[in-house]
Image (cartoon, rainbow, N blue to C red; front, side, top):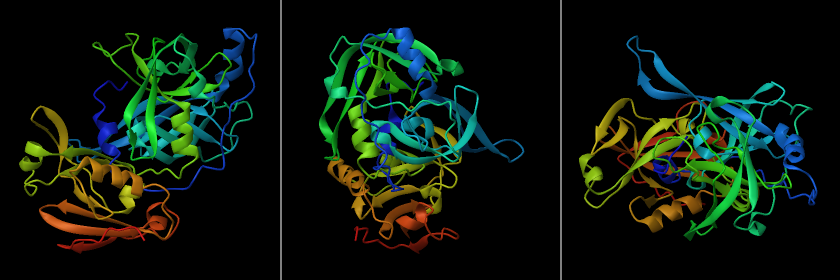
Length: 382
């Protein structure tokens, strides 16, 4: 499980690319199922919960020169009949392969449809028909949930699928600033037991409606200590279903200050060091490269050798306002719009340009993106 130091979520959000919209498949709340016991509600909704298994490339090679991969496990919840599954961004952000396992044992391939790492939310699309035995969950109205409300979480802690834990909403945590002026991020704090493998799974209210998506825990041991957090369904609906969100397939570490100087960035400049790039992702279609050498700098573990992103859409990294603008500009892109990045690769400043249609697989994607050495791209949307 992913603990409080959510570096991946904070940094991966800085580079986002568009993919197909899911706005037409909204899951709205159902009427109250008053009078049902916890046992009845769980029995009714448990088949909507899925286990998500991913395989990702580390960027490293073993002694035989073979790429080293790692497997991860998380959870998710089916929210539409056509196979859309809501989960946590950190579960699937750099996944090369995604497999969804249902309660009846059916295993289906899936692809990442959209992702908003800053909110730790993602939408996954099944690539085959949804099993007939699967229940489609409904998103509840998290704005109406009161502190102290009884809730339950279903997921695959430590890989043990469809495990039920029960607790209460301990607090509502809302950020002062909004995500790039789009939505204020909000999470429920809960004492329901959450462990590794619960990430991306649903938090249900006692009517069986999804009011949150499990994100992370605060723990001194790595296991549940009664401090779990779930992104509210309101945030999930607004970012994944009402907007054209995006998935880049890239995670990065922001280089600022002394760390930026260690990478010989110009004085006062910042950048984003790419760590991993998922196969067949928009990031890979742009030709971006991840790190290949494991290292530790100033107490921070990272991969060296990857591209350093200096600008996106002509907006340089460094100023938080600029980074917010990059996130904002990355929403609702049209297929023929051009994505422009300026990167630093092996000491050379390079501009990369490609259309949204190409990087999302909606058009011709063979070959590298247009690259111009030592140039400064205009980067503006058009």
